[in-house]
Image (tube, rainbow, N blue to C red; front, side, top):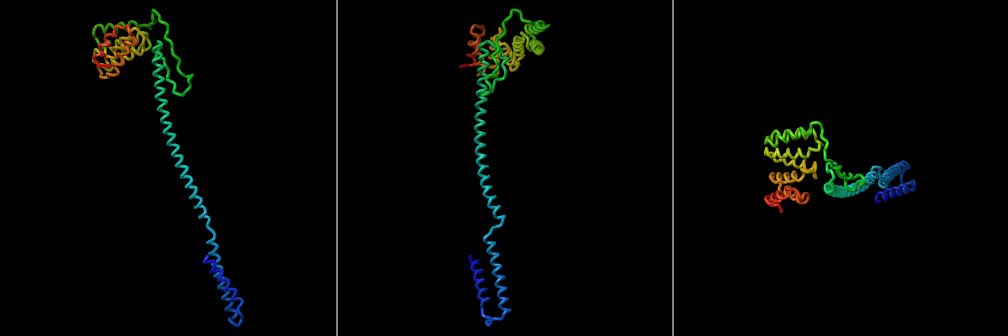
Length: 276
């Protein structure tokens, strides 16, 4: 504003000089003064124009600043929403995993109770998935009096059994291992697993013996050798120091096989392990 008043005063002075009588100053001096004042006024006007206007760069900077602030706000909100989404996703994943595991455990127990073959259970459907995709419960095959053996299967089993009865645990464990590899789905395989566990236990290999007993039981959980396999599994687990697992295995005998001969021995073993 002060510059505007200065320019306005310069214009007034110029007008006064132009109207001054000729006798007060020469024509050349008057024109020179006018030119000088006009130059001053022009410069002041140009300065005023610059004061009243902004450059394009200034406008872009202001706009960019506002946009960056808005982008910062959006980014902060996105970060918050993302964090909440990840937390919810992790919680849902944990719930799904836990629920799926529980469903799988229930399916396994249900198949066992109904006499199904747990080895044929498919992968448990993820909780919240297609219910129609659940593996159907496989009914046990009709029992037959004469199981079908592969060529040489019965003879190989008898040779391994003879080695065990002769007290040659090392040879028996090797023969039963070869038998299991040769006839993995044979009708005698669960029993071969059991006798291999006995041979390994005789060799002092308790860990592998426990695995063999477990495979024997899981391979035929309702077969004639199942009570013995479950009992020996509990005993070997106790020898390995896994007392809780041993107590669970031994405690299942009275529930699953109340008439089995090993139920009394299982109760004694549970007492030795101080099972609740």
